[in-house]
Image 1 (cartoon, one colour):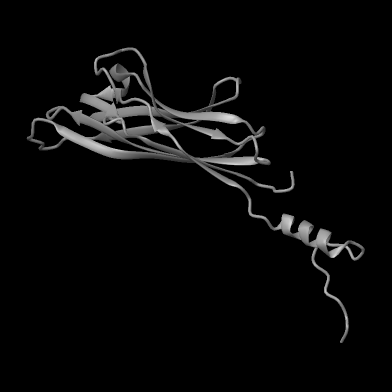
Image 2: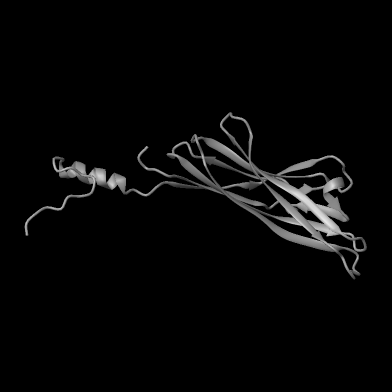
Amino acid sequence: MTGHIKKFGCGCDRKKKDCDRECKKKTEPKRIIFECGESVEAANFTIDSSSQETFTLARVFVDSSKLCRPQVKIEFSTQVVFAATPVTDPVNIRMTFTLKRQCGDGPEMTIREWEYINSFDIDNFTFAARSVSEPFTISFCEPLQCPDCCEYFVEVTATPATDFTNIMSAAVNPDNDASMSAFAKGICSDC
């Protein structure tokens, strides 16, 4: 049997060198960006405050300007720590975590919100207080309409007088060591 095997996407009338270069270009891996963020501040709520309190916990910068139709994945983790009074039921705590983005000189935009809610009764609890420490994580992915240099950041908000019941102290990111990172990749390589 005689014949010739044609490479996918290469025409018969092209020079072999040009054909190989074009085929190689189509199989190059997609570029992936990984960025480490930074912890910004600890959130120590004033328990008797009737005003809403907001703290910026962490941020990460992502430059997707060289990616074609970029997708960005944000990873965030921290600790929620609070102490409850020992003799009064029930214990309730509620906080709102907000992921925001600002690209270039554009406006700051809220991307998504998550609620942290914890509620329990203290039956037969004899210690001075009950302390709770729980991890809180966010994993979020979004396509960007316009590649740009963007800052992503996470805020936590609560109004202690209405969002906390029988809470003696409440903090998020108490050691100021929240973790935030971003992955970005282009979903096409021919742009």
